[in-house]
Structures are given as C-alpha cells and as structure tokens.
Amino acid sequence: HRGLFERKYPRRLSAAPDDTMNAAFLASANETRQKLPKLTHNQEVARLYRHALKTLSSWAIDRDIFNEEADAMRARFDAAKGCSPAMATRLLKEAKAELYNNTHPDPYCVPYMPGGSLFMRNPPLPMEICYPDGNYPADAPKVHLNPDMTVAKEDTGKSAVGSVLVDFTKKNME
Image (cartoon, rainbow, N blue to C red; front, top):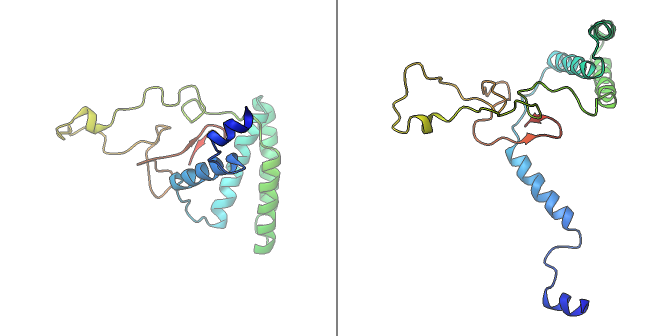
C-alpha cells in the first residue's frame, strides 16, 4: 500500500522540509526587522552595562543583594575606563560573552512589554477607525505607538510604524 500511496501522491517538499520552512521564516523575519543604528563605543558600553543590570535583576530578587552585586559590577566597569581602544574592544567582546553565559532562562519582564501579562491588553484603536472622516480633534495624539505602548521614534531604532516582529521567546520586538 505504501508504494501505491507514494506514486499517487509524490512528495513536493525537499528532503529536509524544516530547512525550507526555516529559510522562509527567516526571510520573512529579516524583512520585518528594523535596522539598528550604528553605535559609538560609549553607547555600546552604556547599553552593555544597562543590559547587565537588567540580567542581574533577574537573578538577584533581594534588593540588598542586587545593590551589592551592582556596586561590584560598576567597579569592574570603572576599572576598565580609559584603556586603549584595542583593549576596550577585547573587554567589550569578553563582557558580551560573559553576559550571554549569565543570561537568565526566564528573565524578568515589565508587564506591558512582550511576554508580560499586560502586553497589548488594551491597545489604542487607530485614528482612522475612530475618526473615519479624517476630522481629528485638536487634542488627539499626533504620535504612533509601538506594541509595548512606547512612542515610536525612528532615531532610537524602535519604531513599529508598519509591521514589526514581536519575538515572545526573547521577550522583545525587532
């Protein structure tokens, strides 16, 4: 019976259908992702420090422990301040690897962000639906909102005007 079925309904996918589907999904996701702005070294270090503090807050729930660990982390960042550019690049690469290794499996998430309990609970209706004739009131908001209810700005790289990819596994939007 199996040979008859295969002759009657030949396979249309390649030998590895997962690769085809993954490639299609990745192409779609890359189309939706927003381009990140080019950051200076100081901006990269500031973002790394902030991300490290957020990761630390996922691990250390007690505020006293968090403050002690945050002070130790700040001391590590301050100790490397003013080093040569080559050493700074190496330290930045090592710090990113350390942050990756210490990432919490289920990080704390602000309730209104993707993955939070309040995410898109009461999203605002588009102005075109509220006022189909186009007569917006003078006090109507003139900004677009991202899915996490923050103001969409092109210069910050966080602008969900149009389509946006919300990644619930990483609890962020791209």
